[in-house]
Image (cartoon, helix red, strand yellow):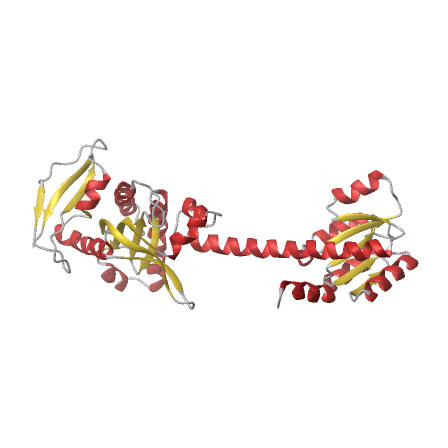
Length: 382
């Protein structure tokens, strides 16, 4: 249906309510709008008008200022409280042409003020404008609902500043989500021995545990300008540099990992009574080229990252347990992050699934934070 035909259809289906105690004016309004093809209802009192409006849901209400019983202003305020009428155009009418009366109506959020006796030609012309205004309100409301829904959905994966960029008018924002090759840092987090932990807990306690941990860890990722790409059981795949590069994504990922370490240390001090043992985790961090964008079909789309570096981060996380450390980073992350990292080289023949040798390091901390216990300069295992 064309836009013009849609508007014409809406016009024919439009509904008008006139709340007017003067029978002559009431009949004139009813005949005018009926002849123009609108559905019209009338009421003699404010109380009656409120009840009809709730059921009839008119597009436009013509409301007399001076009514028996409740005044027009009181009725206006009551109508404004009805959510189902929030987009309805309410026009105040009166024979009183004083400025005070007009201002009183507009101050109480009437959409317009007209004077009686009503003029047929004026009402016919203004009706089109009133319906257009209502249509604009509904479209704006629909856009706001959609924007809120999109913001809520995106906030599950991206930090608030990234969400704002994505939803901005920047033409490049949407292109980032469609897909592009870029350099990013991938952080893979996993809770060790989670299967054995789950076997000893009821499903609801497992869910509570993950919700408790993931809430803090996801907040840490967002606070370091990272994004949550996937939740995989007890694991989290986080990205730094997707869809926007901050020029210090590797350092952000490293700092995030160190803060996660502190969070887990604190958690173990106050862990729930249903946990028999302290939790231990593994974190792998790798930097390199990825494809980042929406993948899927019209049935389901998902923003994801694809690339060898994603697999590398996962493999490094797996190596943490064998190496007896909690954080391992690759050489690319080390080069891009900072010279102040306290690292130990991890020597390994090869990483499962990798033909080329990957330079990797155990991350102990950052120089100047606090004195760390002396450790060997390197770890060797096969």
